[in-house]
Image 1 (cartoon, rainbow over the protein chains, first blue to last red):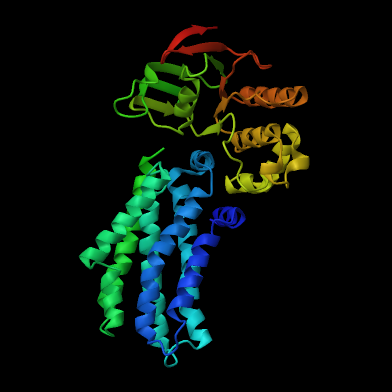
Image 2: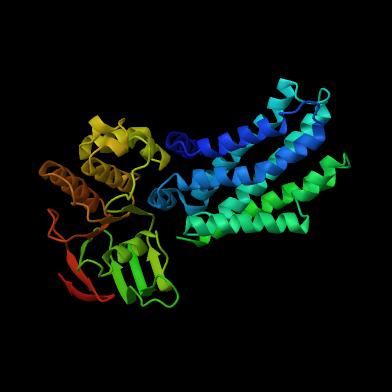
Length: 206
Length: 198
């Protein structure tokens, strides 16, 4: 997994999604007295497209021929699992940043409790996994043309928003300060299903 | 298994409606055999080799291998932002074996430089090294001599001859005759094996 992270770091492709996340955090927390869970709901939702962007950056940072070499030597499933796991690791780091930075900066109306931080982190991780799964389903080798893949991701996000499916249901629960267990589980399950589907699709492609 | 590689009626097309690049190919390679694959540009040599190595899957028919294939493409479209040592480690080559192969193939001095800054010949040697690593029973090498100087060609020929002695089967695509004598030459053209000469 490490090598895919090294490739991403040296390619500098991570800078775009990282800058986008920092800008969004700045915009969300520009005004003070932010409600804790409501704000975490917003940034968790924003993490979906940012996670997708980061995943595309990671998966496209390596020449497809290197993936082929790795697949022949180490197996397709193992190679693809490592690449997707690397994307999940990067997105998990972004999730931690999105939860910890505003808490550390005192950008909330009150100090977040341990429960707030836990719910916030889980919401960001679940939304991040949805972004990773969507992007992995729409990246090479599943979708050969990057423009088509990006359009597919945008379309899928639109469908999720219109249907009120996770991550929208999670956002609503956090905004309304309602019960979050169900929406968190649904978002996590969707993320896991998308990642599993992506690995299955990648295994079928050359 | 007494065969290192076998194709049963293999068809390969890129796209459902596309004409087949390879049509109804039957092929058998025995352990210790060196098979040279020739043909014009676009004749299907690389497609045949990619199927043999398991990089690509047949559209119809079946490919059987006696074990894992070591595969080296003729080039990479873009060198990854890694050193040779990092790439070999990423591909599962043990550090000691990577150093030994680098010594034998003549890129030991370039193990830690970025591949993107190395010559195409050095990158080619790294691709050959990862194919040779782990002593696979089948070596599938696409234009292995391309871009190598005389010393490197001789070093590679020695390594391949040793592998052959140990029972590995070699499938090599070549435009001209390489320094390693082949047991058979297959000429690919128009999606078929047009000729097989001893």
